[in-house]
Amino acid sequence: MSVAGTSTAPGGPEGRDARRAPVPGWADHAALDPDQLPDGLVIADEQGRVVCFNVAASRITAVRAADALGQPLEKALPLEDLEGRRWWQLTDPYGGLAIRVRQPERNLLLPGGREVLVSARYVRAEPLGPVRRVLVSLRDTEARRRTERSHAELIATVAHELRSPLTSVKGFTATLLAKWERFTDDQKRLMLETVDADADRVTRLIAELLDISRIDSGRLEVRRQPVDIGAAVSRHIQAYVAAGQPADRFLLRIEQPLPDLWADPDKVDQVLSNLIENAVRHGEGTVTIDVTPCASPRDGEETGTSVTVSDEGPGIPEASMNRVFTRFWRGSKRGGTGLGLYIVKGIVEAHGGTITVGRAAVGGAEFRFTLPVAAPAYLA
Image 1 (cartoon, rainbow, N blue to C red):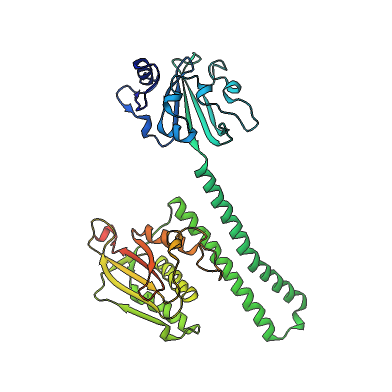
Image 2: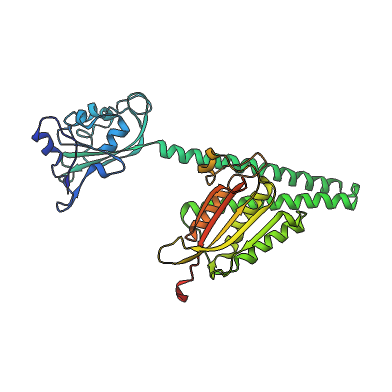
């Protein structure tokens, strides 16, 4: 494989030919355009001069390829470690140990203090021979920092959400054990009901964390069965009415005939529960649920099922629409972990469906998810 590039090297054709010099160990029948790589790639020849400086390397280092090509590696890429030591002098790729073949990825600093993730590979024509090429990979740390911030936020949220119910459980159980005889049966029942509710809250949070782990790793399993989506919505409405919500607050409209839907009933219930609860808790007026047949969101299928949940509240600000399905987004300050809609999106997409958010005709929030009918392969 030969190295091709789009930037012009100093020194005319000789510089350009140097960029295309075959790299030992690479197949000659394939060609690689370094500018197509997502990470920065810098290659120095056996003299330590840069012969390749791709577009990603220019973006990460803010150095033009034309200024880097032909320059000594330590000048084109003046890296320092976190203690301020010059990296190429410290590692000495050309004069160091002959058994060394690489430098593992680590955080280094560019001029100005910007951090980059750097790894290097030393290419030798033969074992213990002189270094013929030094291949340097550069990656921006911003993606890693976003991931680390997300993990830190998740840990902080979990710690906060667990502290309150566990403190309550510990307090009430300790009080009951220490002073059981002093309380009436009604008082004992009230404390035990509180403990039970807080234990349910902890269980829900742990379930959410497991769902997030499966969604992020692509391991969320969907066990498809026939699902009567209209009946499932009706069950949720009846549960809210039994809990004290007025029956006329809910309007269910089902357009018949609906296609046979194959989905995971438990996960569909989880999606419906979250969306209806959000409409009840954060919305106002009538909560309307429309169940209709629609075009399938998946190629190769003609029909799907759409569920729209809308309310008559203030709705979601336009500026927040693109953050609704991200972790920790909260529509109000009325509790919640901010993980529910992130999980809902993951469940819908695991089914091959889509979910959107918008403004209802009456001004409130409107969530619409669409699932393909998706019969299992053995019935297709």
